[in-house]
Length: 309
Image (tube, rainbow, N blue to C red; front, side, top):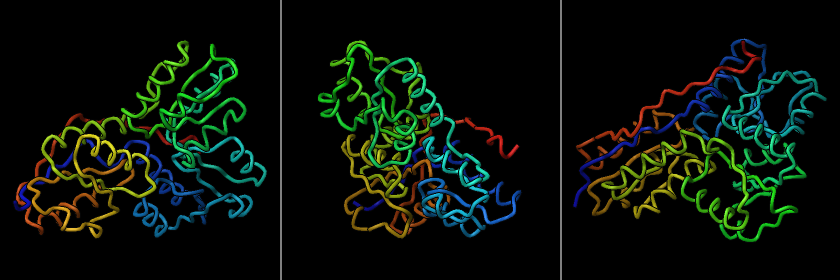
């Protein structure tokens, strides 16, 4: 069966937080004398990082690599108070590109801790967003990564426990963990609004929709992009094969043997031009029908940080 059809998931690609973070770097490069430093990857995508590097941004791992007094941007994933303090001690001019939805989780963490709750953070160890959130209330927060950990985590007062989550998780996996926590802590308190961001949810729902027809789904995104990895997991949970690729160069034609329909989506940090390059590659492999499956229209936007007003 030759490859015939490509279905593009929509929404896909850049979310409002990523667009804002990229604009923060571009505006800073225009407005401030260089060099402009960026702590960590501004978003988790090498194509985005390399494009900004070519425009003059200097990416560093830690603030110790930044000269005192220099302009420094914090990534969209957020940082802990300790990082803010380190920036103050070095007299850095800080522009904070933290996604407002991540900031919301930080605010929730501080509010729950202030009210005497033990916090359970559902997330992935080592992710920058998790490190930043845990740093807000280091003595009152526990990381829960799996249903198994939800069943064994211990807290001082089971009557006063609150849960928050990383913004880029699988909606279904998170629900399973929250359900396990509720079974153990009946008085578990959650935020009034879901912590998993709108874009993450929309992209996962769009993948589920195209998985009804697409036999294989290509997810365009970086290997360290949490929301992109979750898209591959959602695909596999729907019974389809998924491949996470950085760009069209990583496509293996052998993936499409006896496949008629391929789905394509992209993580929230992946530029649209990568999607179009993948589509062109699939055309060369025989696809003649290109369809877009739009599940919901996104119109979210975030204003720039005060430092750029």
